[in-house]
Length: 437
Image (cartoon, rainbow, N blue to C red):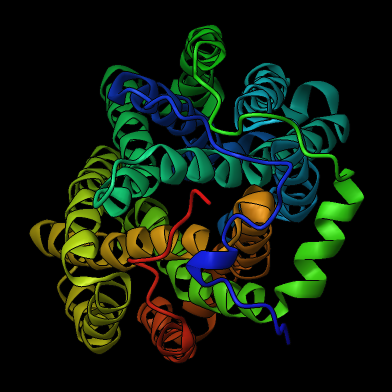
C-alpha cells in the first residue's frame, strides 16, 4: 500500500512538469470530447452488431455458440487495454496529452479499417476470425490509452469550481457514441432486409466512422497542451513510480471501476438481450441503444454538476446503491412481461444510475493523482478495470442467461456493486484538491 499522500500540496510535486497558464477554451474541450466519442463509437458498435458479426465470422452451428464466440472476441479487445494504458498513459505524462490523443485516434483507425473490410468466414475461412481478433486487439490498445490523457486534459483545463462538470464530459462523450451508434444501427435496420443486414449491412457503421476519423485527427492537432513541457522521466520510470507510490489508490480506483464497467456493459448488452433473449424486433433493440446513450449523456453532465456542488463521493455512492437495490426487480419485471415499454424503462434506469456514479468516479480518480503521473494512473485504473471486469461481462451474462435464466445479468450487477461501494467509501473526497500544482 502506498504511503504517499495526494493532498493538494503534493499534487504537483514533479518540478519538471507544469500546466499552461493560458485558459483552454470550451471549443478545444469539445474537440477533445468529440474525438473521444468517435473512438468509443468504433469500439462499442461491435457490441451492437454482435449477433450479425457472429454469423459472419463465427458459424459454429448454433445461435448460442455463435453469439458466445462473437462476444468473446469483443471481450478480447479489453485485454490490450492495460498495455495501451501503460504505454500511452506514460507517453502522455512524458510528452504531452495532445500527442497521446492523436496517437490513440490513429490506432483506432487501423482497427476499424480491418473490421469494416475483412471478408466473411465463407470467403477466406479461418483467416477471417483471426483478422477480426487482431483488429479488436488494436482497438483495445487505443482505448486503453485514450481515457487517461483525455481525462487529464479535461481536469487540468477546467476553471475553478467546474472540474466535475468538465471531467464529466468524458463519460458523457461515451453516451454520444452510443446515441450515434444506435441511430446508425436503426437506419441500417430500417432500410435493409435481414439477409443484407447479416451479409454486409452491419459493416456500414464502421465505414461511417472511417469517414469521420480524419476530422477527429485534425481537431486534435489543434488542441492546446495542458502539460507545458516534457518530463525528464522515462516512460518506465513513470510507470514504476505510479505502481510503487500509489498502489492503494490504484487498487481502490480499479474496484470503483468494477461496478461501473459491469453496469455499462450490461447496458450495452441490452440490444443483444432484446433480440436474443426477449425475441423483440432488431429495430426496437437499436432504439433501446439510443435511449441508453441519451440517458448516459444527460445524467453524466448532471452528475458532474452535482459533484461540483456536493462532492464526488456522494454522487458516486447514492446512484450505485439505488441501482443495486432496484435492478433485480426490474429484470424480473422485464423477463416476465417481455414488453417493449418495460424494456425502455429498465434500460433507462440502468444507464441513468450507471452514468451518474461512473461520471463522478471519472472526476475523483484523476483528481487523486499528481499531475506528473495523472495520465498513466487514470489509464491503468480504467484499463485494468475494463479488462478484468468489462472484458468478461458480456460472456458471463450470456452464459448466465443460458444457465440460470433471464435475470442473471441483474445478480451480477448486484454482486459487483457491493464490492465497489466499499471502495467508494474508502476514497478521499477530492473536490478541494489542487490538481494544477
